[in-house]
Length: 58
Image (cartoon, rainbow, N blue to C red; front, top):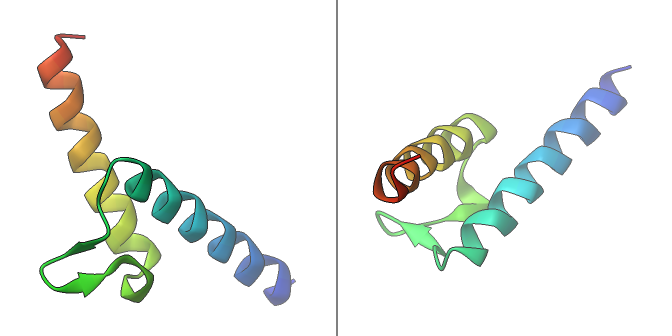
């Protein structure tokens, strides 16, 4: 069960890293995305998503 949880966390981290890289973000505050925790990546992605949604007016 723990292995499945770790695998799921790693998959989600990888997905968020790829999404941020696709947006042209490779590191923030001199810290590479691969050094970030899942929580940090989720928070950053949500902030960028909110900023983007605000610019598009949707």
